[in-house]
Image 1 (tube, rainbow, N blue to C red):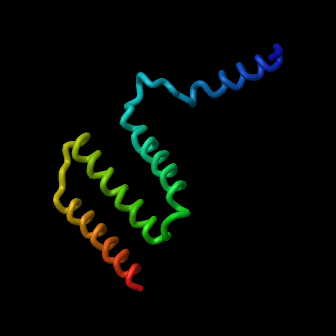
Image 2: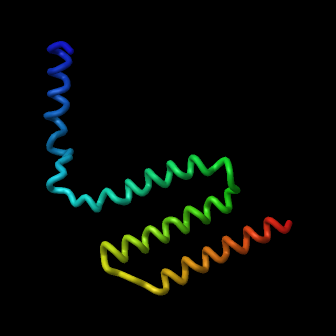
Length: 105
């Protein structure tokens, strides 16, 4: 890297340093939890997509989001709701009924 490249990189860095704050000591690391879960979600979906139908894939990802949201609410925010669990169970029951009807057809 020559002097010109270093000057350009320093100029760009100094221009945007007031707008970009990447300091982890001022950031709540729980804010990154959604991104981490999202990365694993995309990774798993890329592996599973060729093997199952789109309807089941959609329902499974929806159930996964519901369950992970309930776990985060319960352990991080101390919020527990029976209605959320009932809703998740209804969606799971719908998935099972759909899968059973697909196998019979």
